[in-house]
Image 1 (cartoon, rainbow over the protein chains, first blue to last red):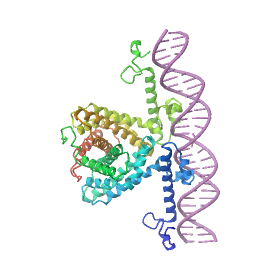
Image 2 (tube, rainbow over the protein chains, first blue to last red):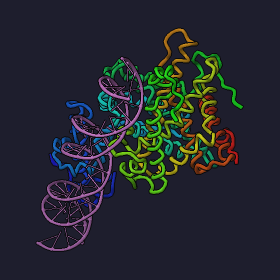
Image 3 (cartoon, chains in turn yellow, brown, green, cyan):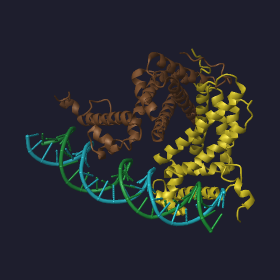
Image 4 (cartoon, chains in turn orange, red, yellow, green):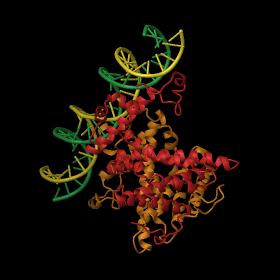
Amino acid sequence: MTPSLSPSAAHAAASGDAGVPSRRELNKAATRQAITDAAMDLLRRRGPGNFTVEDIADAAGISRRTFFNYFGSTEAALASVTFGFLDTALQQFRLRPAGEPILESARAALVELADPMTVAPVAELYSLGQTNPQLSRSELEAWDHCTEQIIDAARERFALTAAGDVDELYLRALAGSVISCGKAAMDVWFARCGGDLTPESLSVLRQLLIDSMGLLGSGFASQSPATPSPDRH
Amino acid sequence: MTPSLSPSAAHAAASGDAGVPSRRELNKAATRQAITDAAMDLLRRRGPGNFTVEDIADAAGISRRTFFNYFGSTEAALASVTFGFLDTALQQFRLRPAGEPILESARAALVELADPMTVAPVAELYSLGQTNPQLSRSELEAWDHCTEQIIDAARERFALTAAGDVDELYLRALAGSVISCGKAAMDVWFARCGGDLTPESLSVLRQLLIDSMGLLGSGFASQSPATPSPDRH
DNA sequence: AAAATACTTGCCCAGAGTGCAAACATGCAC
DNA sequence: GTGCATGTTTGCACTCTGGGCAAGTATTTT
């Protein structure tokens, strides 16, 4: 099963994304994948903190030095899983129509995450890394990186509908809150379902994500303290 | 020159907080402080990434090994500054009356941060560490830690007023959003005022914090950037 | 085929982080 | 005070990280 790489198409490579992936690109992607696979496997079998970069490199069939050409640390290799996960949400967000209320777009994007194929690696990573500080730190970084990207995406969207400058505080506070709520939903889901991937469990996750966006959209008005609308000024 | 440590009071030491601090506790606190001071000083003078743990230890007058008895890394030593900063906000939050709307409590707690003595170290750390990934990671961790503590504080508060179980999703989504909004306000402030500590700059920060809580309380209702309160300067 | 380019690897080195045991400081009882 | 128990610091030795460099190997271009 050789990849379809006709000589006539070869020149189109190296450009980056759309064209036929060159041999080099395929190799790099394969190596990258081999590394994260090996890392996940070791994480599963030995637990966090009980294996070295050299172990990963050996398992992936590359040298230790090459590992560092791809990732700066064990955690970075594992976090690439979370990055992929959050990129999924981000892509969904970008696909939403520009006129849609932004929280609705966020809700739609987050709900896409409650899919077995998408959430499985992250669920596993989460339960395994729960105890490891190094790992959690990388996870935080991934969420933060996603926040930055949502800020960009939202800024672009607002630039279309609004004339003047966009309020940076609005953008950043909103993006941060959306991500925090998504994270909260995931946390509660893990606590409640333990990363279970059954349809019922995923439906719980989906509902939690929807609910968290609902809370955000209503200004957290509901809960016990009787004042729904905080009078500012 | 012995500190007022009467024999009758001596037994109360070593318990943790309120009693007369023992000699050991004083020494440890002093060493801890010496370390973070030395670390901040080196950060100022050499820039992030241009000094080692050994440099810090030398400057603090302790051995490298002892440094690691106090902090797990250079970044951890620097992040203790941010921890202190966020603890200030947390204490303020805990002091608010239990009946108060929670977003109002959060607003009040955050506004306390816009104080020269409190914000100065963090402003410095922020501007110096802006470029350094290691450092930002530790900052993220500090904010996350604060989120966890706010969750606990809010849970306690709700346990007083509400009878049954408290909704975990509500708690976590709210706490995360509050922290995200506080962070967003700080980010915008740094971008706008560059960590300046003049009264005008601090008043901008105060207003940003207030505005971000307003946004949160209103569910980010205004989609157009025209509505939120105008920047003042 | 040969030259240009990109990727891999081994070698080397400074620095991070940690277990251990000896030295040292402090607290407590007599 | 003396002496013992307990907590803290330090040096030592060791493994692991992370990255510069140059030689080697694969891929692409001419």
